[in-house]
Each structure stands twice: as structure tokens, then as C-alpha cells.
Length: 598
Image (tube, rainbow, N blue to C red; front, side, top):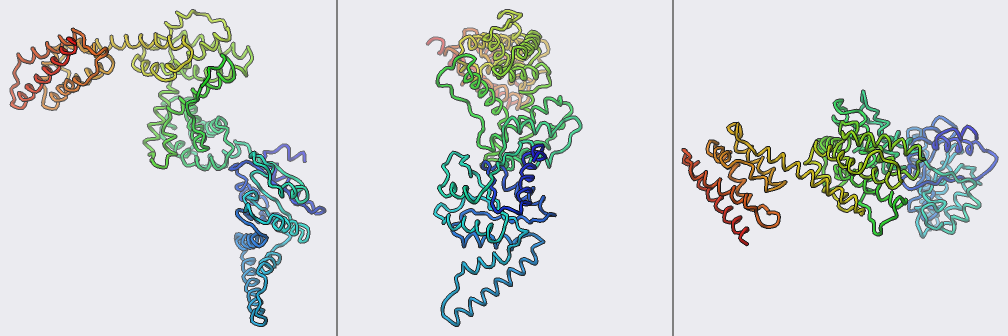
């Protein structure tokens, strides 16, 4: 038995089953129980059958799904024997001959007496004639037999096979021991006392299941540990369900074959982490446990397991949302193409694991710190010191701001000594925002900040968002100050710049010189003139903050209109578009002027 303990669960089971099959002195059955979908049938039909193939015994799997009587059981045994693979050709011929002989006897008996032989006796006789001592009977799906079946007859038949014919029998069930929380049927308890001597649990290692199911089609990579990433994703999901892995297998195989996974221009660790997350999310979705935004009905005490678990749930939901193509791939109403997966994977890496080492390291620190209740002080101190250094450098991506906040306030709650003040912390965050104020506004406006129950974190996020908005407006204003080389700007490009500015703050439009706008319109071809004019058409529908435009914006519209009146367009269609443009500007002037009067 010592040799069994040193092996993986599946190998241990085979070792125990071997010991049972070698026991010629005792007549009893054994049982195997395991969670639904854990791969029991797969283990029986592939590993166990393969192991027994060249030995003394031949495995005969009989499903008890839906059977109710001993007749049903004998019929299933016969059918299982008849359908054995290539070795069973002689058995099939024998079965046909025996069946034909019994049918002949039955017809002769009916002809002489007018009475019919008991068909159950016929099928039972066939089964007993076909069974040999070499057959190892495995009754699968025991708990799925008919609810109204004759348990006494069913298990009495098994007992008869064991004691009268000397057969080796194993019963396989999802919940033989009531592991699913459902009470055992009364007869199961009685059967267990007499028929079954030993019950073995089937709990395979996730790594073993992943190796068997998920890794067969992986495209090898020169610089990326594909197998390691898949195993890390399996571990993160906690999946020990073979059926869930089988459902996710095709999608995971497609993801592993993506060009972006092989792209050496992206840091291997970033690709590793993204692949790990993809496997994690695919398995969660396959198990029916796709992350949702957790509910937090009552504020939990700071640093309590509930509060930290809530933070983990929020972080997981955000990650899953960033990789939305995974969820769509399991939606039966939609179809995800290879290009969808490529773009989704690239976008996820770009947001979660950009090629910036500081970003990657901060995310890993945040992940570790969310489980701070399981760490010692020395572990937290090492993480804290590294975190303080990364934050003060300010080289991480703005997408990390939530993680930066989480660790900062968690360390504060733990009363960890911080080498810089909160004002310094704000300045470090501003340095990061300076690199991409547009993305910073988007990130700081997300639900993870404005739904945060901690007022100081919401207020700090609002301070940083206002700073990002101010910086973006400055850049937009600079971008619209076009005068020196205005001839290089097309009407379409100018319209794009004006439109980008409006999306952020309509007030910055006044930085675009009216003369440049009019000159650009007059020298352009039809499509560029229309692109520029249509911007002003759509401007009429823009919601003005506070409801009323500034005096400067009204004056800006008037200056463009007056400058356009003083020009001429040589082409007839151009002159027509100029008239339309003037009319659009007059409508804007009327609307904005009326709004200011109100």
C-alpha cells in the first residue's frame, strides 16, 4: 500500500483496484464516488481500461442510467458484452448463436404448449453464459437508476453475480456517500453494509486533468511556458470538473494558437499572465461561475475577511469585463472569430499587462496584498517597500491607479509606515496621469471609483480626475491653436480635432482660430468641406454643461460666420455648400444666443 500513497490520485485508484482484483479469497464489491463532472467515466473508459487491457481482467462498463429492474440490468450487461471492441468478435458471434438458440427453444415451447418462456430467464441465461471470470463489471451512474426501480432485485442481482459467479464488481456514483448534500436512498445504506466493503473517493489533481484534456493541441512557443500558463489558469479557477474542461477545451486551444500569444514583441511574462487569465476565465464561464459584480449590502469592517473578499470580487469582475470576448465565446447566440480573439487578447494585454515592468509588478503586489490576512509581517514589509519605490517612480500605467489606491489605503489601515506624505502620493499619481490624461479620465470615471464606499478614496479619485481633465483641456487647446501651417491641415482632420475637443470640453473650441477654419473650408474639395460643415451641424445637438454656452463660444461662432461671409468659393457646388455652412452657423448663433438670454 505504501507504493499507492506516492502516486497521483488516478494512479492510487488503479493500485487499489489492482489489489481488489488480486483478492481471490473474499467475495465483495467496491465503490467509487466523486463529484459530478470530475471525470469518473473518463477515468474508467480510458485510464482503467487501458491499464487492464493486457492483464488478467477485461473491463465491462454498464451504465445504470434509468434502469428499474433486474431484467434491465441483465440486458445492459449483455449489450455491454456484445459491444466490446475488437476482442469481442467471437463473443458477438456466440451471443448471436445463443440468442438464436434461445429464441428457437422459445418458439418450439410456444408451439407445443401455447405458453411463452419467461424472457427474463432468457436474458439472464445469456448474460450468465457470456460472463467469464476475466470480466470486471463496473456499474456506472448508480445514483441515476430509476427512482421507482426495484432496488432489492437490482442489488440482489449484483450480489448474485459476486457470490454465485465469483465476479469482480465496482459501483460508481456521483454521491454514493451523500456528497452532494442529498440524503442517501434507504436501500443504498443497506447495500453498503453487505455488498460494498470499500469506498474510494475520486478526486483527481487539477494538473492531471489539465494535462489530459487541455494541453494536447497547444502550439509550442520558443519563449513562453504555455503549459505553465494553462496550469496556472486551472489553479486560479479551482476547476476539478472534467466536463467543464472539455467544454472549454476548444476555446482554450484557439486562444493558444493566436499569433499574439507568440508575439515576441510583447514581454513573455505579460503574455503568460494574459494566457493564464484567459484559461481562468474560460473555465469559470464553462463551470457556470462567470464573475459578477459582487453585492455589498452592508459595509464590512475594514480589513475583515468579508471586506477583503469583496475587493477581490470587484477586481476579478473588472478583469473579466476587460476580457469580454471570453464570455461571448460561450454565448450560443453569437460567434467569435479568430480575429475577435486576436483583438480581444491584444486589448487585454494592453490594458492589464502592458510592456511596462512597473505596471506588471504593481498588479502582482496588489494581488498579493488583497490576501494580506494570510501573510506575515515580513512578507507584507517586502511588498510594501517595493510598492513605495514603484509608486514614487511613477512609471506605471494609469490603468493601475485602482490597484495603487488599494495598496496605499490597505497599508494605511495596517498602520504601515509610509516614506512619503499624502500630498507626495497625489503628485506621484499626477505624474502618471500626465502620460495619458485621456485614459486617466476614463479609468477614474469607472464604477470601481465612484461606487467606492470609502469617502477619502472617492475624493482623491475626483481630485485626480479634475487634474486629468484640466491637463487634457490644455492639450486640446494647444492642438486647436493652428495658425502657422494651417495649409497642411485638411477639412476632415480639422473636423476630427474639433470633435475630439467637444467630447472633453466644448469650451476649448474657442482656441481654434475662426480664420483658419474658414480658410480650410474654402480651399478644400467637396468631401473635406462637408466633413468640416457637418461638425457644425452636429454641434447644434451638443449638450452644453450648465445649459448655457459661454459668451466666448457665442462670439466664436459669430466670428466664423462673419469671416465666411467675406469669402467667395469659385465652384458652383462649393458656393452651394458655403451657403449651407452659413445657414448652419446662423442656426448655432441663434440657438446659443437664445440659451444665454434664458
